[in-house]
Amino acid sequence: MSCASIVRKPHRLLDLLREAYLLKISSSIENKHAAAILCGGTTIFNILTNYNVKPSDRVGTVGVGGLGQLAIQFIAKTRCESVVFSQMEKNEGVRDGIGGS
Image 1 (cartoon, rainbow, N blue to C red):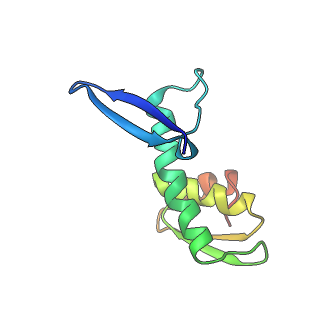
Image 2: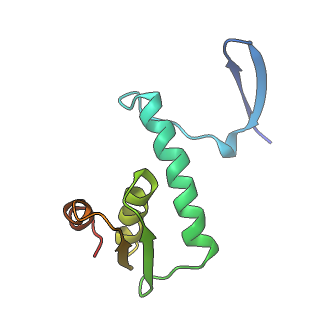
């Protein structure tokens, strides 16, 4: 088992993590943006894989907020039919621009 060590600030706690669970993030991406994508991306990815979603499936997303936008994009990239439920007309343009219907 290969491990990598990281030091967390401000408490300077040393953690040992399995290298298999780490990934390199490009230095061109700010930490705050990488964290949001990793957190939201993991949430959406887990839902799609836990429910065994296939390219021919129709998947609904309720709302076009932060996770909703990410979900619509993930669903579109998996070649599923993405159906978006939103009560706000202004979200139609956003929905259409990122792959929802």
